[in-house]
Image (cartoon, rainbow, N blue to C red; front, top):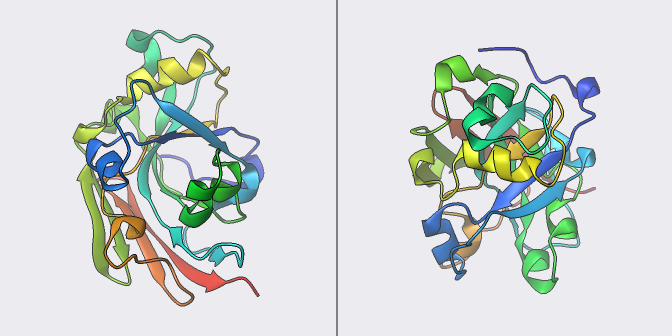
Length: 221
């Protein structure tokens, strides 16, 4: 394991990938993407392990999403896929929070994904020397101790090296930038009945071999 995530260090881009697991796309009724679906989060969303996820009054359904996060270590632009891992510092566990009702009511996702506290990121960094290309890792989300998501990064539609290359064709990647690689199936919005986060919940996101983070959920005061 490597250095901790330092809040004051975070002058970073947070680049996220939507619908990067086939079963998750299917559970939401979406077609598989032909290329990565990218969106961004701002630094106001970032929290660490143990910090509270705050539910905004504007949304009636917030979902948690357990994800593998890729942290960039070496700057690059138009990085070749074969060279991608040389630009990766390592991997963290992340929780990409989504206001689903807003996400599906609006034509783009900035507001739905961008509320304060909507990106929990682990403190532990697993280097490429330990984790390789990020494949073969179990990804789990638990809500109040109950498993909701249980997937594996082997099922990513677009791999970590491909994503680093693809993203760098649009944005110059800088040290500390994060790429959140998508989430497996099992989210609360896709359940019957739907299962939104509520005040008093505790969400755990686990990335095999890296870290499990836990965050309490509170309603905005």
